[in-house]
Image 1 (spheres, rainbow, N blue to C red):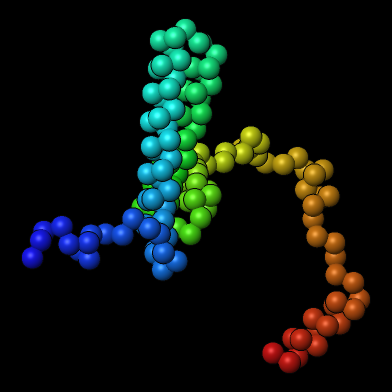
Image 2 (image 1 turned 180 degrees about the vertical axis):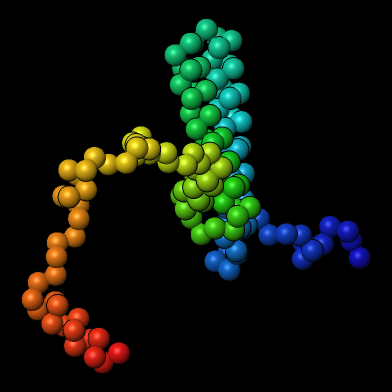
Length: 140
């Protein structure tokens, strides 16, 4: 039996039944290959003294590499959407760097002036409230 049996090899095609993790890793590898090619072409452009083209290719390659990292991160977290993964990562960053709120106003340590206490005092009960309280004392 030969060692290179085609039945034993992994398929190079993507089928509808693949898991999202495999698809994310496949997309990430495509972005990584593209980034590598763009970096190589940027180096060639620099060697030929085409500065603008080299900068543009480098910027595109960096964005492709970042996109590949997003898909790899999504595959690690087994999320359905890389954007959701990015949002969850940002929330984790917020939790890690959380600074509790401190109020800017603090109440004075001294007691309030007497004229203020009169304003904040509860008004006396009216007739109806006194009547309800009187019946309540009979019931309880």
